[in-house]
Length: 540
Ligand code: TXA
Ligand code: MG
Image 1 (cartoon, rainbow, N blue to C red):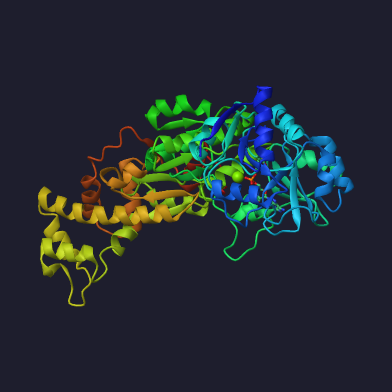
Image 2 (cartoon, protein in one colour):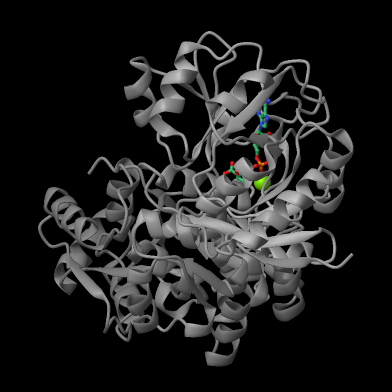
């Protein structure tokens, strides 16, 4: 089929469009929200063409567009007073009202439901068209089912060229996200989809509070039947896997640098900081600098992610206020509800006796997740573990006891011979410890994770830390602590201290712990206030 290109500002083209609609054809028309795919709502065969062109599931009902309230009356059983108030306040405009339908509406329009969705769109060309054809027009968004809604005639062409009779080009849609949908069928008005008209605006007109469908911000359970069938279908989904990343730009940047996705969907104002942090310009797609712009640019931006063939995209979600809730809702659905709070990984190291473990305990009590690498080191060499097998292959079977457990003394005797043997030991164990630590890090969400590791700076794990702090204390203080704590000889203590003299802590923040626990806690609190990019609800 050839798809005609019609111009919204040409009265003759409006006349052609009206003629096509009266003839039972399907065409794309501009509205202030998104482009709609319109057909005569009173003719089942015409409406069926919409479902075919879009590839839309038959159980998802359509919105019927009308010129004014008068045109709505024959389509409903009753036009209640609350509908009158809402229509007076918001029509023409981005509010869809669901009412009980009359018998003249074919069931294909409402997917068999006994209710109908109605709205008067606020676009001069489409209003002119509604008046010219004198028909109610069933019109879902003019995209292929599942892909982002179209906000320009170009988007429609990309999805539906050759599948529909015409596209009426009215330029870019001013609002950019679909209408607010409210049902007046039950006792309490129910908000089914957030859009350009906010819940607060509706409540103000109705003079009472309205209910909000939980499906706006949460995925439906598998067996749940949605009030609005559209809620259960996959929506707005670009080919890339989207993840919404909560929190500040700093948290986003840190997380991005660590996780390295190939694409980012961010605000205009974020771009400079991201470039400064070394993010590549070609990985960035932006969607405006305030909520109105986010709404206007959202769907074009989602399409751009596909044009750039990204696989994995991190998104900065907007505020949930006003039309922001509508944008957030579309993004959540585009991301299939994949939203995360990034962890903050704090590496903690320090020389023996300095108080690293005390610091870790203070942080654990405050609500941090502490990963003690000494514990991981024990975990990885359990009898029968692959790491123990590797160590046996390297150092001989004398390093295990008869019961299969590790003989630490024997391993130390063989591994601490020279640099080569020491390196061989570290290569085997550090790799396994790092893997295990990373598993723990990935299991946590929105937490401050503390990695307690004496050898942190020589290990791979350091690369996965957002920040590294070194706990220090003068040598004599450390010596006294080790003697009191570990019940070993002075010689052994000195040996331990000597073994670490070469620890290079330059470039990292040192926290002096000469004075004891209360002082250390105060210093840690100060540090966290300075470095944490998000509020992690710590009790410190
Ligand atoms: O801004 C808009 O509303 C755009 C423009 C073209 O007007 N239209 C639009 O239509 O977004 P569509 O089909 O993409 O979304 C209609 C939504 C769907 O989620 C559908 O399930 C819901 O409205 N809906 C339609 N009739 C309903 C009914 N009787 N009861 C509950 N939900 C209904
Ligand atoms: Mg749609």
